[in-house]
Image 1 (tube, protein in one colour):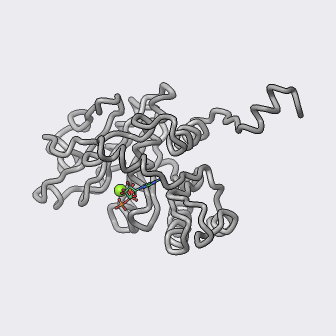
Image 2 (cartoon, rainbow, N blue to C red):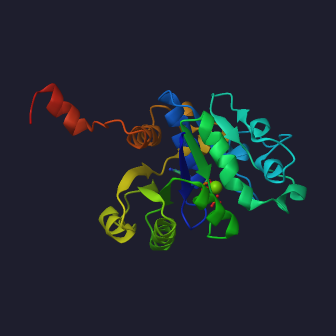
Amino acid sequence: MGRVIVINSGKGGVGKTTTAINLGASLNLLGKEVVVVDTNLNTPNIGLQLGAPIVPVTLNHVLKGKASIEEAIYEHSSGTKIVPSSLSIKEITKFNTRKIPSVVRQLSQTNDFVILDSAAGFGEEVIAVIKAADEIIVVTNPEMPAVTDALKAVKVAREMGKEVNGAIVTRFKDAKYEMPLSSIKSMLETPIIGVIPEDKAVKEALNRRDAVVHTHPRSKVARKYKEIARKVAGEVVETRVSLIRRIFGIG
Ligand SMILES: Nc1ncnc2c1ncn2[C@@H]1O[C@H](COP(=O)(O)OP(=O)(O)OP(=O)(O)O)[C@@H](O)[C@H]1O
Ligand SMILES: [Mg+2]
């Protein structure tokens, strides 16, 4: 059985979809079998960001009992597997959120990682998605409203008995007006597993309908996402300092 990780934030627009896509693609680059699922059933994200906007079968169809989950898996040209949700307004009603756990369980049988990109807020749909996951990664920006909502996500997940893997701070500009990382860390009650800088490479990747780890593999954003993927996969991540120490036999 593969690991099911939900990417959540509470607040909207902080970088969940960008993180889900790039974490999924980075785990894929590590040789893991990965599927990234768009659980934004009302306002789909993944298909649009990866250039597969109109597909015949989506997660919405599966939840309505109109198709099997296998029929809703698409392979992006980069090799990342995705399950998009529907753009059609006809499909945004009457889906059965209670079916989400069984659909996710099915995906975890054939994948090492199932990455669930969730919607903002804590509505019924989002709660069903968190319930279906084993672990949660919380995404936030370095500002108080985002961190406050991320803390809510941590608490909701813990109340539901989920393992909190940690937080990712995205769109970090290292500016004086931002909330310091130390304050974010102490407020969130969970470790920060990565800090992703603000970088136009993310928008360029979006324009090219691909993950930034594919379009700009040497950018800092890509390197950081790949480092997070190694941490999530349980591989030892060597920092520059520890690498130098190892090479020179120090410590
Ligand atoms: N590190 C980054 N540098 C620059 N722009 C970024 C970065 N991360 C995300 N963005 C941009 O921020 C915007 C919001 O990102 P994204 O769609 O991933 O957020 P989200 O949390 O999934 O939003 P929603 O709650 O609407 O689903 C997008 O335009 C994205 O390209
Ligand atoms: Mg999103």
